[in-house]
Image (cartoon, rainbow, N blue to C red; front, side, top):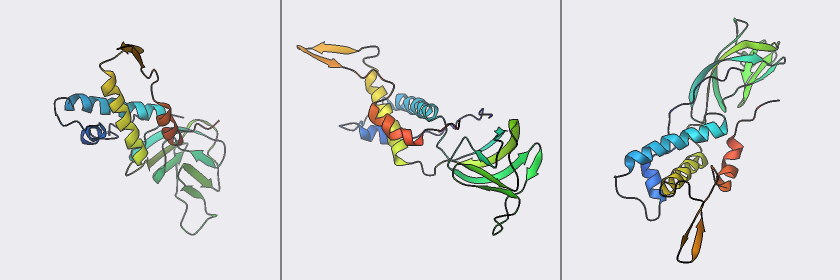
Length: 194
């Protein structure tokens, strides 16, 4: 499967939403540029961790044939398919109301070819499709907000595992992401077929 399509640069949240998350909310504009950079970085981190881009976008990719009538697409949920070609030959969309006619149909995760198969082999199928969420699910936006807030607070203690003050010791998170966010994001993580 050719998976070289870059992720979009669409941020998963905005500065105002991040500033409102803090308690008390941040009101100064002094760190807006820093927050913007953190939003871009954490949006990219989330996309990489998910293994896919949840933002609505159009993709054209050359994919490996599956050897059967089903072809999962690497970006989903699929919202539309504009073109399919196998070995350079265009495949028509399946005519509406004709479930046995030759052609492709699609669901949220990929293509189904009636009257044929996607032949097994490297780079045999070219597909142009749209996929993603519009609007983004709130949990994806909130995960980005929380990661940005975490990174913003961490900047004063980069590399510290713990710190003692007044006889008490404070320990700091040593993971790339809190367990609560891992649990929230896992349902959106790309499933790679075996």
